[in-house]
Length: 217
Ligand SMILES: [Zn+2]
Image (cartoon, rainbow, N blue to C red; front, side):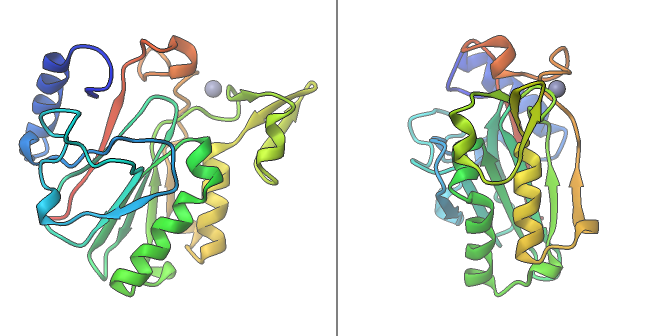
């Protein structure tokens, strides 16, 4: 689905077909040049179509979007990284996050929720969250040096370290006041289920990218 790697024409066709099923025009899609940062953008009407037809005009240096505008389809691309969907039904506000370990270290989830609170006056108790497929602690091995990046979320197994990317982001949401019952986790590991999902770690640089999309109607 991404233009970042592989055949752009084929990606465009894949997007078109997938989005048609959701009643979304692929030309409206808002995509970012994802850089594994903690930066969140409030997407508005003028962003519509950014990155929809070419990578070059994607929104630069961004890894999450929030919006209260209708008919603005937000997209993030992943292959092992975690996509996080946020929805505040009362305020009618959404957020979509690309959370790899670097963005998670930058607390991108907290930053997205904080920006939602600032812009739209939402309360954490009203927030629902969903986690897409991502590499999980069963497969996400990290080095012994890496473990200093996180104080929480590292599992030790037979002297090796594994990162719980979803677990860390879930803890952040709970710490912000989001109710556990409102956090929905697909629980899917992209590496374990590589026949159905792209996994950067399993496939290497040539791996495709999955697209997570969210839009208010
Ligand atoms: Zn796994």
